[in-house]
Picture (cartoon, rainbow, N blue to C red):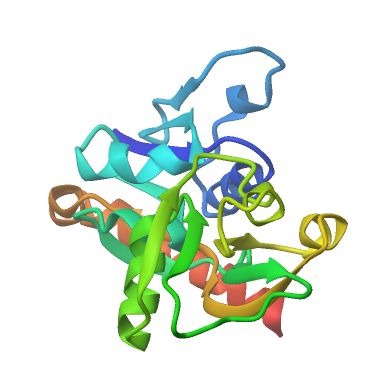
Length: 210
């Protein structure tokens, strides 16, 4: 049985559709209920919905053999997993944003609010910039407005939330997209099934881009 951790929400539904096209369908997943685990014994596959930020944890610890996680999570937490495939969906970017009238004075320590502390530290360390990290878990956009920070480091998809809060992107750190990942042991012992899925997903993406 291959265990697959899917991120809850619209991204997870898109990803499941790719598994379905790969021949690993599980009709019960479409039923209207609150179940979180679904399996198709005939296909030898079990899916479960988890919080997107938790997918890599399930895969790293072997509760899931494979899963789909955002590149942001992989960069931030550096889990011990194999990154198998860029699925070219869930695309956005990790960016630095600030108030429209922000001026960066390099003589002062920059106060950075973010829930992606490791990504922010690495970005500014490479620039040799002196910073203080203010770790927040949500509503990051209000930090510079209330004077808690000078800038924020966060995921930007459309930029609408930033605009509505009089913020703008001042730097892009890295593009983000969904990645197929695998537990290292599972990749070895369940390789045939996993390789079949990789091949099909690769073909699906190539067909989409033709």
